[in-house]
Amino acid sequence: MPIEDQQWGYIRDDRNSRLRNDVDPKTMEAFNNGTELSSEWKTYRQALLDLPSQDVDEVGDIVWPVKPE
Image (tube, rainbow, N blue to C red):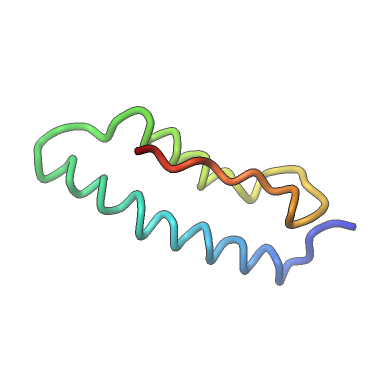
């Protein structure tokens, strides 16, 4: 059974929270230091953004990316 739109809404909320709380501070830190965001963080960010495109049938099948150390 495909994931319902309402469930995707909760998943996107969780994803957006991770972007806001995990990625944004690292991005601002890199910006303020005049450096570039590391490739690990870029990959993590992109995986979060791509999350809704996963072809899964159940919420439990979603593969969340692992946050870099």
